Image (tube, rainbow, N blue to C red):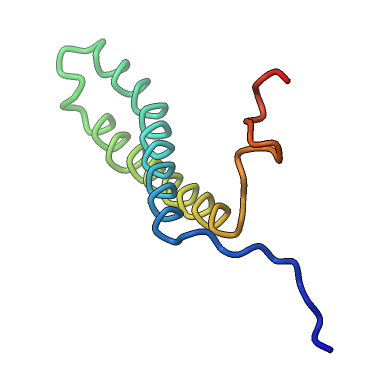
Amino acid sequence: MPATTDTPEPRPIGRSILLGVTIGVAVGATVYFLIAIPIYLVASFEANGMDRPIIRTGLLKVALPFGVLFGIGTGVASGRWLRRGGRWTVEDGGDRYTTR
């Protein structure tokens, strides 16, 4: 007699990809801005601040790659988690933050 497993059926792949991309873009933009805002602040104190190589290097070689890497990582992780049956709601259909 074959053994039965209670594995949930995978969610639709299109939905998982769409949510993964959305979450990845949001996290990537957030990480970029958290790194870039102090750099822009430092650049604004000087007359030719944006022309300095350290500012351009900080934006293009530090902030942008970190934002892209964190965005891709969280997008892939959340998309796979949702595809495998991850849930943002509890069993009664409500979310975790409403008062019961």
